[in-house]
Image 1 (cartoon, rainbow, N blue to C red):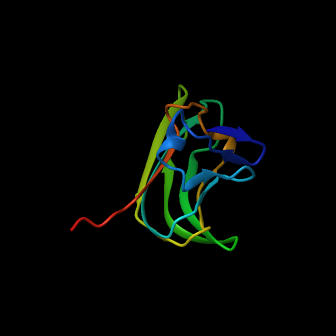
Image 2 (image 1 turned 135 degrees about the vertical axis):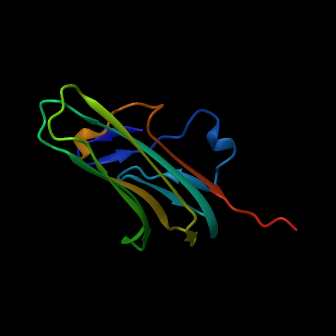
Length: 135
C-alpha cells in the first residue's frame, strides 16, 4: 500500500499472484478488481496517526463495493481520539465484511482524511478470499 495524491493504491504482496489471480489491484483508485463472482471475505486494516499539534480528532475507514463505478457502502467505522493530546496517537481500525461480488466489481477502501493514514506496509492491509462452500 502507498499513498497517491487522493487515494490509497494497493500492491500485491510477493507471491500473492500465485494464489489470487482473479483479484488484482486497480491502478487508479483505492480498489481491487474482482474477476470471479461469489461471496468474499474482506479484511481491511488501516492505522491512522493523529499528531499532537493537529486539531483533528476524527477519521473514517470504510469498505465499499463499486458496481459499474457506482459505490455501495459495505461497512464503515468512525475513529475518534481525545482533543488535547500531549503526544502523537496512532489508532488502528479493522473492518471485516462478507459481500457478494459480481465479475468486474471493485472492492475499495475509503479513508478520510487521507493525510492521517500512517504509511506502513505492515499496519495497513486489504485481504480478500473467495468463500467456497464445503460439502
